[in-house]
Length: 209
Image: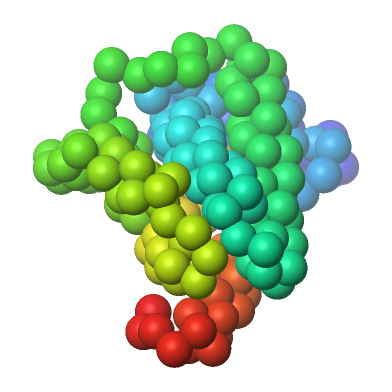
């Protein structure tokens, strides 16, 4: 009976994997532990999220290092350092999974296609995905100093985090790899918390979020 039940579970997991565009080498337990050995297909939601979020994170790291050198405010500098370190580490995980899955880091499809947003217009001036800053905005941030730089950074990062939360929630709806789903869930929680914090920080500086 135990063997029959186990075999049925494996069959169900395989069927689910085929339906979601993944290959399963063992029983996948969703958000679970060592049994989760799903290898997604090249154009799956898992691969798309890993690629797009890696790009999204890279810009957050860039903005954080820009503002760190343009203000002496310890709260902003500490926040920028935390964001840079966290998102650089997460980016490494996302790219590492693509290497592990032996999948390309660049897709022929437009950004966000894995979320069903392939027809969405790409933002102007280098903003490839929702929430991303434009080249012009990054240039202005690079020239700002003091409170102006702080407010500009906080506003840009609030929008950036909102875009990141949207993408992570999309992964939670579509991704099948347990480790990636756990990362997406942690992103939603941590970035929403930082959005609340940064909103208060903007107000403390006499500006509107």
